[in-house]
Image (cartoon, rainbow, N blue to C red; front, side, top):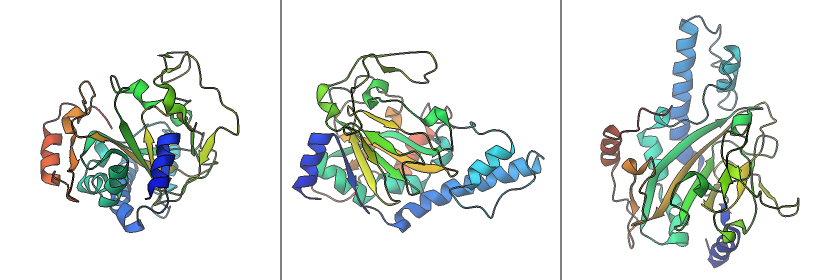
Length: 284
């Protein structure tokens, strides 16, 4: 990643790195997700809730077929506890991921403890988020840099729920938010002004990496396809950045120290943090 990419990130508030990861880098986490899907399908079949476990279906289709068969299309919004694993840790601390972050915020990097695997289902409105800034949902983060890394686990097109961004919108700072009827999340009091030419729709391939600032406006489109748009996201900041008040602070950890390419936190250490964390059983 050269200086042009860094300048683009500063100007736009987000950056896509094409082919940042290999199929082999993503395969272990996809296997964790697939194992749960298989386990849940078998449970539902044994309970007589479904008549088929759909084992011949692809990763992009199987979970949705299972949920449709038992009329539970909105069973989950995002997966957290279900995907906690060494495979997840290895992706969070992957050298290629951290190399991108190092060019943007320096070599002292902490993982904020926040991670989600998201199965964005066809026509699921709950995951079709309006324009927002992540700091609106993370108290006291607006004065620091917090970066989200977003990785598609399948190819992402406009029709299956691509993310959209407003380039440069992070420069105006955090806007005021309020609750309105029929919205699951708080929305800005003054929605950002945009035109079709301002909006950047990010169609991405499996293996691409998106990183974005906590103040840049973005949203997710409705998935109008018949497949699941699987993705995973993590958040990071410079070591020493306050995480006080964030629900996931207990499982934050150093991911890279300046001058090294080694992660100072082991899987065993992170798992021990998880085991004593007060929130680990609060989420799916």
